[in-house]
Image (cartoon, rainbow, N blue to C red; front, side, top):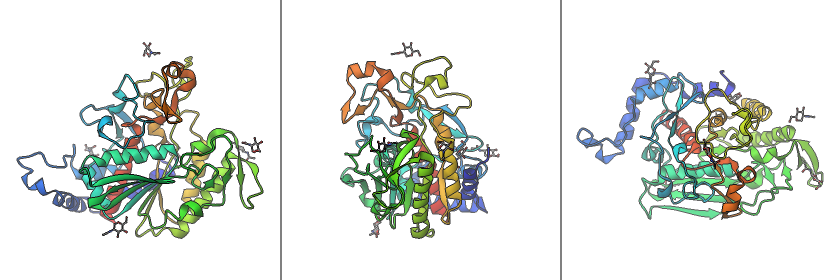
Length: 406
Ligand SMILES: *[C@@H]1O[C@H](CO)[C@@H](O)[C@H](O)[C@H]1NC(C)=O
Ligand SMILES: *[C@@H]1O[C@H](CO)[C@@H](O)[C@H](O)[C@H]1NC(C)=O
Ligand SMILES: *[C@@H]1O[C@H](CO)[C@@H](O)[C@H](O)[C@H]1NC(C)=O
Ligand SMILES: *[C@@H]1O[C@H](CO)[C@@H](O)[C@H](O)[C@H]1NC(C)=O
Ligand SMILES: *[C@@H]1O[C@H](CO)[C@@H](O)[C@H](O)[C@H]1NC(C)=O
Ligand SMILES: *[C@@H]1O[C@H](CO)[C@@H](O)[C@H](O)[C@H]1NC(C)=O
């Protein structure tokens, strides 16, 4: 059960003299809240369900990526779909007509520990004068949107803004001088799909050894969160170059993925300052296109699924080969990259996808398209609020630890 990533998790959360440091955190956190003086009479700004000491000491004892989903309508969702103006039509499932909403009410409970309660102001304090950038495809875009929604409600109107500077989307929280960026680079390395809107889905061509066009925009970014998976998985072979631009040939996807990842790893190793910058890599987001994988004999997909899967489950859409390559390449790097291994916990969430309550080509699916859910259900993207919020809670736990204890 213990994988290479759990080692990193352990080392991230391990520290000596936990209680002393934790007292330090509580003071730091509370001092940022003017109303905390009245905490005896009023509800304090931060009310973790357990003490900080427990949260942190237990995180150091557990692997936060193993656990179960528990129904918790008291604290979930962490924000309301309609109160976040930054969600794209692609993910606003309620507005798009999804009849059930239970998928918003599940909380991830790791075995043997509790995730720290997400607190937007604490995160903004941590990120003060910093940039946080998500690099990847539409899955990363949803993690970016989730992050923006998780924090935006504590920022008054007029003090927050979002704008597009293709291939980037940039959210700013003025008072904190915090910048949160989404950078579209579906293969991380350069490709013919790099235009944020007009990308070529069918004739993919990846430049396995080229990254500078993108990476020049990553220089000096305080927190970088990478992800790249589904764009590789279209066919077993992929057209790519690895050297002269005229030398296009078909590569085995696994071979191509490894070459690209090594290009990325090399850039990270040469350009990241581990004293001031932190790098994360998010593992593959699972798909739920074949319901016979969780209900024997059925012929559907994620459409009309309203509960998570119970018991052990790993869908065939999540490639073990790619996972192994990721683990190997990251282990061999000089710079410490923290793996956010969200695959297994998201595997259980067959209920969390946008299904037919989404858009295609900028338009909501029509009634007719929705009825043909076999052909049209999107069992890859996730509704928001939803599963990507949990990925961000885990990212938050890491950042909380990293920036207070380094
Ligand atoms: C943390 O771990 C201790 C000892 O294993 C246990 O007694 C306590 O209940 C745990 N706390 C939480 C919040 O899980
Ligand atoms: C604001 O944040 C940026 C990084 O995003 C930093 O370079 C700049 O120095 C900060 N400004 C101030 C006034 O601290
Ligand atoms: C690679 O490109 C060639 C020429 O455009 C095309 O015929 C072939 O189908 C492509 N292969 C893949 C795996 O897309
Ligand atoms: C191609 O990839 C498959 C898995 O996708 C793997 O089993 C096979 O060994 C690879 N072939 C080569 C030549 O690398
Ligand atoms: C959805 O599933 C329920 C059973 O869980 C079933 O009664 C209902 O007819 C299904 N709806 C559609 C549109 O297939
Ligand atoms: C992620 O976790 C899975 C088990 O859920 C494990 O098999 C895999 O090796 C881990 N991936 C990485 C990159 O550590």
